[in-house]
Amino acid sequence: MAILVTGAAGFIGHHTVKALLARGEEVIGIDNLNDYYDPTLKHARLNVLKDHNGFHFHEADIAASRLADSVPASVDRIIHLAAQAGVRYSIENPGAYAQANLVGHTNILELARHRTVQMLVYASSSSIYGGNTKVPFSEEDRTDDPVSFYGATKKANELLSQSYARLYGLPQVGLRFFTVYGPWGRPDMAYWLFTDKILKGEPIRVFNQGKMGRDFTYIDDCVAGILSALDTPLAAPKNAPPHRVYNLGNAQPEELMSLISHIEAALGQEADKIMEPMQQGDVERTWADISRARAELRYHPATPLHEGLKHFITWFRDFFQR
Image 1 (tube, rainbow, N blue to C red):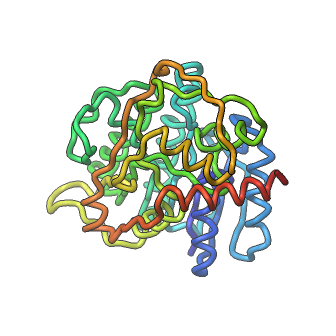
Image 2 (cartoon, helix red, strand yellow):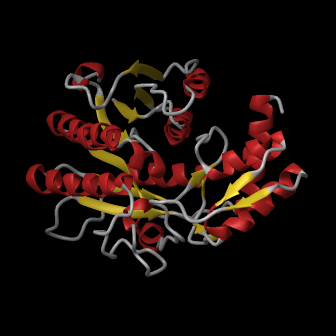
């Protein structure tokens, strides 16, 4: 039997597929290879995976009406990571998010329902906490005040999944990712943008005058949580629908200025900083309460930010020959 990974050419998808192949799984990967950022990076990620006998890739759009035609009958588990990402772009182009995140997620639910899969693990986001001022963020907190359309679509995905769990008994785990970073990352993320501009000698934009904090999660820790969610018997409360959500963070928020300092130290260069106000759709701080994931998924993130950034910068300089 095989595991379907959607968004296989994406950052988290790439690393997840690698981890699954390393333990001997057969993996079916799908991705639409869109141009939200340079598809060259997506193709490079796929090139790392293509030589594995257990990996089979299909270029497909999860929002397409005939999605099931791209998925072999051998699939019995799904890790759904494909989505239109990015908080700021969701303000400019909400239609792309409605299509990829709402229609796409519904199509995956329908596929999982009709194939009677053993488990569907899907990506949610810390963005669903929106305007929440209580920290750390707990899975029990209210999440009905999104500050971005992206966050709203991810909250909607959780509700859609809850309805499918209740109506059809479809077993699911939703994972609220907190600022995942590392090698092969996304070019729209702050740590990538800062590294790129510092190396080019260009100024970096520091929002909210640097008074921001993020719960950065290294990619290897994130993938360990994903695989544990796939493998661990569902821990939903008795008589509840078979659906559980977890925070996957580092439980240790870092200040934005600290992130910049770590990057400067790793590069041996100081950044020229332009201080700017908070951007629309952004939040001042994220902070994950991971006690549920620790207890039920045996999730134990172990990578400090300075160490993870060194791994990223080593990869970045090698990949771009800089």
